[in-house]
Length: 175
Length: 206
Image 1: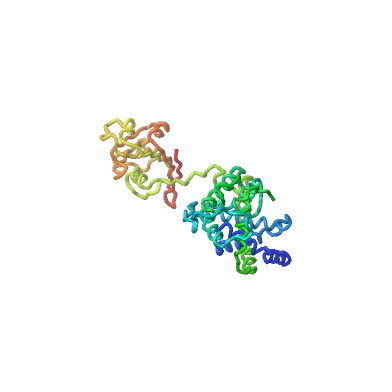
Image 2: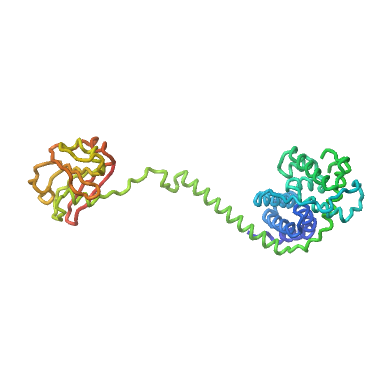
């Protein structure tokens, strides 16, 4: 029933190397560090069970991300879909956004508040499309939904961000 | 990788990266993760074992290695004679031994349905009653009072179902047709023996 010491060593190496990135990815979904760490922990425990197979497929990172996403979306189903429609802090009229590599701190606060207003599927689509830079097709595959659903989720998420002033309406293009 | 094309999308991507980069997670507790994984593995083995047991059990039943109570004709439940009816039919409640077996059939019904079995009026139509038919040899102790031994082959008795009081009876040389009894309700058909060890009954219902 136990993994071989070698397997656990490989797993430990993977966790040590990838844990930070995985928690950050989970954080994009949850918006809360503790929840992100819990999701990552649960996903990594599941990875332990399937380590040999996943390692052979050379995709442990994708496996953990998919598990995190599944747990995240299932958590939504367990606790309902209600998302607090909080007002976005600092969403007063803003100057048009620019592609500035130096992102200002208040942008982060606004983004944080705006992301928390998004339904989980929209948030997941946004992360996969723009953080992971996946295509619509790959995002649909990852989320196990249709491409049109991905487009809808992404468009609605962008519309919300536009409403917060983070995305300029005049520049918004098809998701 | 994909080209999002628009500046807003690139800006969102930049925001998301910056948003994630500022997160400083605690160092991983690898031992906790590994122990959690071991626990999950044990649970998965247990679950898999349970599934295997259930599947093998189902297969075993399916191919008749293990008998299934639902696969074979149900064994008829053991039926014993209703002692109240037995005592009432015997009329005496005595315990004297009789070496002859006799047949006792009884069926719960109503006055109205039992009326054709009797010549006299049975009173109210819907009174719950029991019709009992005894056939065979009767010794002194098993003959209702007022009748001599072996003067009849069939005794038809009507009891009030609640009080077990005899409300009508008749004797006949001919047995009551089985169809007639069955038309009244569910029949309990017993053979009563009086061996030295005490009365026994073998019953079936139809």
